[in-house]
Image (cartoon, rainbow over all chains, first blue to last red; front, side, top):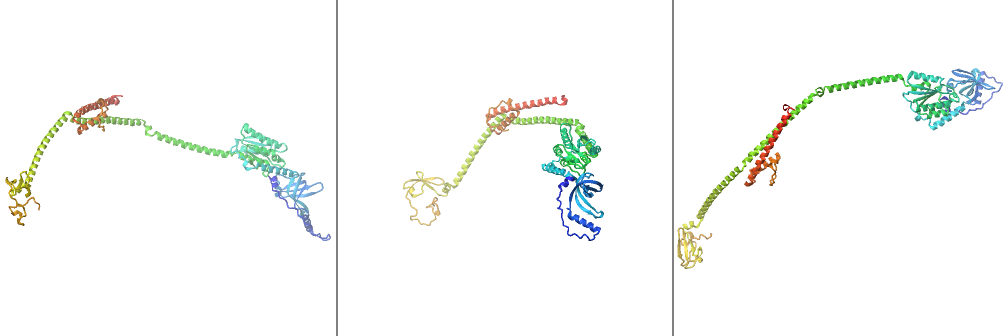
Length: 497
Length: 80
């Protein structure tokens, strides 16, 4: 967008510096032509502003890479030159003879040719300023509304089936679009909407077309994208695409829009609001036409992959089937029966054996019990009891006899012992025992009185006698006599030593 | 076979199950052998024992016969 961009970049030019001429040489002095030229140049430099804008009519315009023309009005003419670098910057605009223009530049005296020339760096038609101003204002407003925001841009469809083209049916832009689609993607349907692309009636037509297409897409057949395009032209020519109505239509359109308006260097509001800007109609068409060749190749690749995968799958399945089919159970199903049959037989046999065994073991058990029971039958029991009784009786008898015998023997034994230790032995040795009539043993002289009848027992018998005189021991008898040797004084056996 | 030593009203021997009958039989014999019961009771117990033996024998015979019958119908040679 050459013209609009330059508006934004507008820098204030520095104020023309006015230097006073220092001195005026006297008229009579001689100067060379060169010097004169220098003086003229200097005078121009000091008297004129460094840059100025000149309004005038173009005439004698030549484009020889650099632009050569004159600006004239009723009373004067001035030669102009615009170098290619500056000329390029005007974008599509080229001055025409007879056109009223505003040229901005600096004035210099071209000494070589003795000409004063305006070296133009900017040129535009008179009245363009007004347009530019309008454009500037609209851009700022829409930018403020966010209509240029990148986030608002819709993505373009990758594989559109139907694309609407809003353009002039007579223009070259349409042909470019159609050719591109034909070349790359024949299968995309193109819906061509003919509109005026310049003049007063263009903007409403364009806006209306976009709105209609949106409605059509909603109600009848789906449209995937819109191409809005026209060929190159001047700012006035392209002005319809800077109109607010068109901008609104594009902004409100739910379908993605690619705008390619004018030359590469032209940028219109429509292109700023659109979802994408293409430099040329061909570019726009390319953006929306998938490369059929590439797609076909991709499809073929996918097909090859799919085929390969399916083949592998089939192979795997076949292998599985083969494996399954060769399984013993599948190959010979009867084997199941045989297995089961033999298992059944085995179980059957086991059952028979087991039941027989159980009966046999129970019989055995019963048999042993019967034997034991028989041993306990009454007759036997009785007999046993009887035998037992006899035995006990015998035992009792034997035991008693034995007992008595033993007792007797014991008594005998005791008697013997008794005898051995009894007083009989003592008596046999010559001792005697004297007892009173009442049977009481006489041990002391006090036990009997004179005249008592006493009995003296000896080993082999006894004497009866009557007590005469008595003598007490210890009186008149000499001591120291051993009792053993004294027959008259028998030792006192019963006296403890 | 653990059987209580307390005297019970004896059930009809001919109605006892095999295990019950043989169990009681073992118990009786055990007691008589050990001499735990008096001689008068020994006779009664002996009688009981004989009845129990008969019952067990009956059951064994019946079972054996039934098995034979079943086998003869089940085996292939028996025809099924």
